[in-house]
Length: 151
Image 1 (cartoon, rainbow, N blue to C red):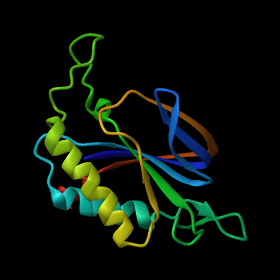
Image 2 (image 1 turned 135 degrees about the vertical axis):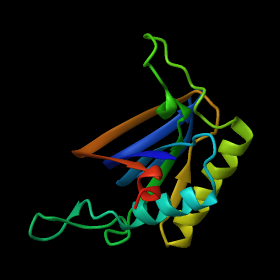
Image 3 (image 1 turned 90 degrees about the vertical axis):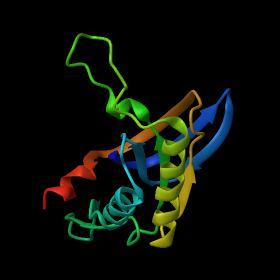
Image 4 (image 1 turned 45 degrees about the vertical axis):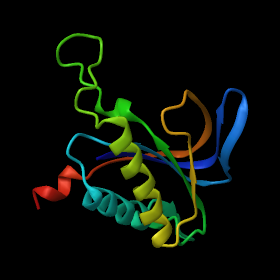
């Protein structure tokens, strides 16, 4: 499972011109579910996202988490994180999990984040979403649940 975590001042997510979700600061997280990912991958990433110290403290050091600053997470499903361009310029998405299972793990990741006390807003799984965000920093962190398997 892969996640792109971006610290934001604000993010809005719309589908067909209709506002679905918005956060006023916090983290926008793009989540990709790969073949073979399991609940433990969701649990690992949720704990990591909730605990990431990427917000500045009073001394300007990145030392606070989304929980510490009392902000939200906008969680967006994004199978394109599994795009493979090693054989040409058109991405192949064969490493992405099938939609039904991917949606289950996407929703489970949201539930795990909420379990840590993080307010979570969602996109619309499988929809053509338009996302506007005001990045903060910018600060972007890449996470992969596979990183833990080797440790």
